[in-house]
Every structure is written in structure tokens, then in C-alpha cells.
Length: 416
Image (cartoon, rainbow, N blue to C red; front, side):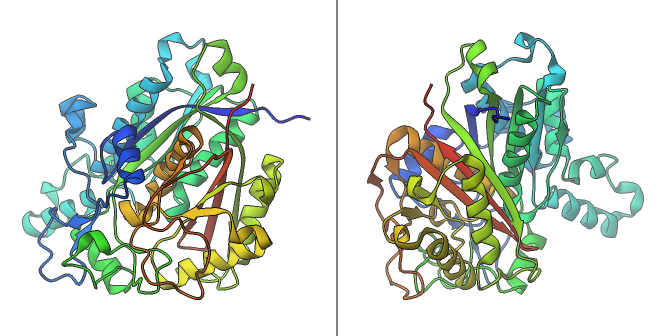
């Protein structure tokens, strides 16, 4: 049976480069870094003192101020990105025949970490009766989807996904499958994260996963594929897409941004934090996603790499691309936008999906900034330091998460 065609009609982004899609994209193509000194807490005793913080964000611009106070920052980001995406899609639940055909999957890798931290401080300082009655709904990782459903009236399939840094890409993939199966007509898909907190930094720093060598030059810290990379930079924000069946989008006269023809998910089954050095799990993921899309490696113009700026991830991803793409690996354009945003963990796949869609729409590919020292184990075309103009018909986005989770999404220019 022929698969239903699924398209994107709206996008919303809250990022370290700006709080809408156009500002985010302009920052990417200009090679601007959103990494700064952390302001959320005193970093004096932390090895890493920098991050990709969201600035200028007021949750009351996007939801009732009383409701905003009852939701963690990660949920506030999700609501804001959703409202932007729905505005671009010109989508209103009142115009839909059946709100049960309108669903939402917006995941988070960690959820309400700030809420956990603040309420734990309150418990030990003032006792159990001072813990907020809203603590549990504020911190659980399904709440972004739940609150978004309440805010916009989406009554269809609704749940949260937690697969670490592959979360948002898995959410998009699940929405793709729900739409193909005929269980909904419209889905909100993506991820949200707000983990720049004291305990979040302490945990990642003590794992020695975060960069510590560029605290005095934050904009140079995230350097995917560069020989001097020494760890990732924490980011925060949200990325949300409106996905629809092609039939539904055409029937309501929606402006179609691109098509999503394929997705795949695999597991390394290797280690809780380290990728399998062979890259076999990611190889299978890219291979299966392209097969799902009915495409081959010859069709791919651009890869938005996971590219975290950690020693193991970048060389493993490079090896996996070489194994799957063969000779084409030397010519396909690859970049890591994490060089500018930092790593948004469970939200990464959401904003990186937008980077892929914009590359298709604009014919521009965002660079990998801070690529200055070639690494013999990372020797592909990473669009170093400056964006390029190039036609992009097919783009893929890779995201990998702790636990060995892999996700690949395929985006394609829409043709009637």
C-alpha cells in the first residue's frame, strides 16, 4: 500500500540565537555563536562556565501569566514554539472538523530539572510542607505535550518521548507514523529542554562531558569535528513542527514548507553514554531512514550532523557517514549547527529539523563554525566557518542519545 505523504506547514523555535525561526536562521547562516557566560547561576565552582542560554524570553507573551508560573521553563518554551508554528501554519483548532484528529508529541530529555532542583532546596531548607503542590506536574517529561494540548485544544494522540538527545527526532518520527497510519490529520512534533541549572551542570561536568577550555572565549568553545574539540556546550530552547497529511494540508489551502518522507530509529546496544565506535547503529539508522523515504545516498544533498563537539561522537558519526555514503561521503555537505547553539539535548532534533527545512527552502547551508584544526579522523566536508549557497532537495538530520539511541529524519523539497 502506498504511504501517505506527510508535509510540514509550520515551524516554531526558541533558541540561544533568537526566539523565532527567522532570527534563529539568520544567526545560523551568518555563523553567529549563541554561546555566552552562564547567567542562570553562579558558576565559580564549576569547570564549565558557559552555555547557550535563551535570552529575552517572557512566558507571559505566550500563555496566561498564572499558568506560566505553574509550569517549568521547558514547558513554557514548548508552548511558545508551538504557538509560533501554528501561526505560520495558519492553524486553529476551531477550523478543524474534529479536534481528536489533532495530536501532539513534544518530548524532553530531562524535563523540569529546574523545578526538581528548586523544590529540593526548599524541602531541605524549610521542610516538606513548603514543597509546591505543582512540583510533580511541573517536572514530569510528558507535561510539555500535555500543556500544549490544553493550550491549543489538541485532543488527538498526545504523549511525551524521552530518549535523551534523540528525543525530538523520535517525536517527529512517531508523529510521521501516526499520520501515515491514519490516526490523525495534524500533529505537533518536537522537543523542549531547559537544563542549564546547577545540578545539570554539576552532573555533566563531573562526567567530563562538557568543554572546559574556552571559558574566556565562549563563542569558540563548540567546535564539532575540529581536532581541538574537548566536549559539548549545554544549550536550551525548543523546536516544534506542524506536520499534516498532504491531503489535509491541500484541503485547507496550507502553505507547504517541505515533505517528511522518512524516519528511522535504532539502538547501539553498546554503552550507556558512549557511542559504538563502529557506528553500526547509526549506519543502520541512516540506511533505514533513506529506505523508508524511498531514497538513496545519491539523493542526499545535506546532512545536519549530530556533531556534539565531543571526541568520540564526532569521529564515530564521521565513520558512519563514510560507511553508508561511500564515495559520496567526500562531497555531501555536512554541518553541525551545535557549533552555534550548543547542544539542546532533547530539543536538539527540533531546531535542527528547522535548519534542514530552511536549507531546502533557502538554498543555503549553515556552517560548522570554529573548524580550524583538521582532524585526520574527521576529514569530510563540514562547511567550515561560513555558510554556502547550494541547492538542497533532500536533507537528513542525525541525532544520538545516551542509552545508544539513534534517530534519523529525512526532509525533502515538496513537489505536487
